[in-house]
Image 1 (tube, rainbow, N blue to C red):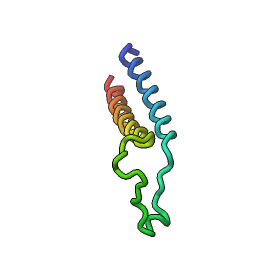
Image 2 (cartoon, rainbow, N blue to C red; image 1 turned 120 degrees about the vertical axis):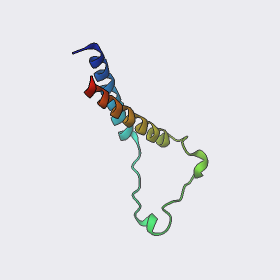
Image 3 (cartoon, one colour; image 1 turned 45 degrees about the horizontal axis):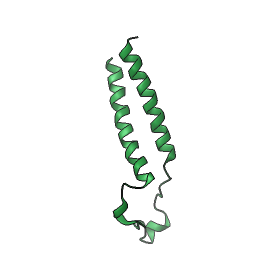
Image 4 (cartoon, helix red, strand yellow; image 1 turned 30 degrees about the vertical axis):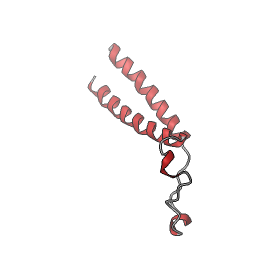
Length: 80
């Protein structure tokens, strides 16, 4: 085992742990239900003015970034 492989493996483990934490910390999204039937499925209490500033939006953004990093690290680990 080479040093770069060990370092990348540790980074991979830390990234996957952080990704699990970010996913489990997010609030459950409503799948529609009665609100979507009644036409209230797209109602936003804060509007788009605060998009990206809430904790859930930040967790969603970091989940996407973490998933991308995890995918790249998986490919790099296969090549090392």
